[in-house]
Length: 566
Image (cartoon, rainbow, N blue to C red; front, side, top):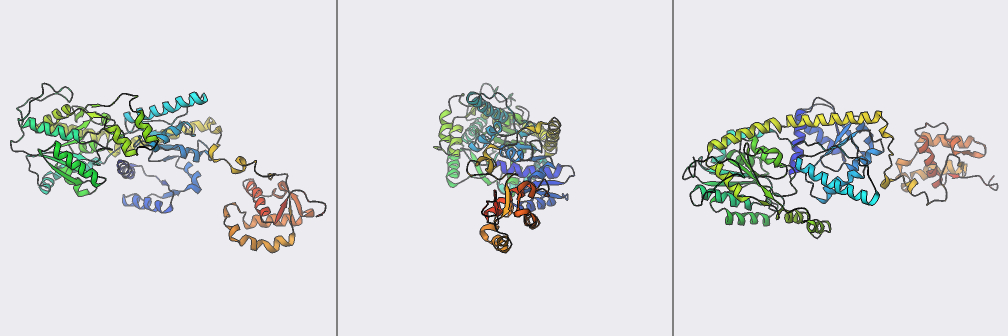
């Protein structure tokens, strides 16, 4: 999945470009911290690695900001509340925002204690608009139902995903060997699609297939020329085929993977029908050698994404870094990254207007449709301008110089704006700015916001109506039977049904202090506040509640001593 590749790329970029510092990593399982440390060392970083787990969550105040590779910072804001809202900043990121889980995570920001010193990075301007539309809809609901007018939101900076541009620049030197390995002649034209091969959840290939076939027929003189090319860019009028060799072949490389045999057959059948003029090569994009061959052999890159699960789209940037001109859909993140007519062409897209998709979202919400089907239904109603794509291919196929010119522009653009050395600096600046915002808020007593987590209340507060009484500082504490306490206590404590609750048990010194004070007290009885007077203020509440544990085991009793027992 793209988000997994993006996460791996981010980590490498972080280790390559983060300034010298101690590393802090929050993990759910301790073995994950070992993997992190080994990864850091394998990338040449020798700084200490400090591990934080839920039991030591308060230590996040030391790094001051924690980055989560997803949009769901709401739950982490609730975790932070117990330590103070200004204890540290939270930073998330959007990947796909079309899943129910992602959308729920986004609207949760309005009800969770997310703060202005938190941020969720939007990877494109389009996905930021999508996030804002979700937030506005939820805000409208709260206003109508609760009369809410005050909204507290995280920052939503637009920062692109990064790539390691040097990895792709190096592909240019592998052109000859890549073509030889794939049996492709120097004169042939190779179009590349890289990424998941999914017609319902990535890019429906028919528009690409049909445009490639139409362009090839046009260049070979088998189809009429269009009167203009205003939608894809300025036309470079040459002969019908330009400098394309008369016997050149069209080769389509699809470098990726199909989720199953059904999808693989669907791609095969569609290609046979829609692009019979091309030699079709499918390479396993999960293999490094296959990826190198694909990037090295290509003349033009194409990705006509039409899917709502796409939020950024990293492959066109990789293609630009590899020096390839790109033909992409004018869709989502591609709008930010590809300069139309400079790095390649952005092909117009169409979708239904607002109000025409409520049935699709309802079918998904009611689990009539799976997430895959929801994406597929939505994508089936997004159209890519096939004629504009056709003319874009014509322009590029007939001119080696045009391909070289656009490829060079795109490569310079990718290096300048999307290399991790540039993007990581934007991350670092954001994290620094969040810290400044948080410190200013702390100085202004912003942390006086209640720390209550309503859905995770103290059980002794939320269930206060259950018992007869609650222990207080004024509760009387006494031995039930002194000899019983000293004689039976070790055996009681050793019982499996007792010693499992180690977190709530007082330590040996605390128990000894309780026993000694009660033994020395008149009538072996004291008020709880007197009994606990010598304990530290930090431990006093915990020892107070531990008295109930001793009462549960029959060692002490709570309440006044009856006259009969005196």
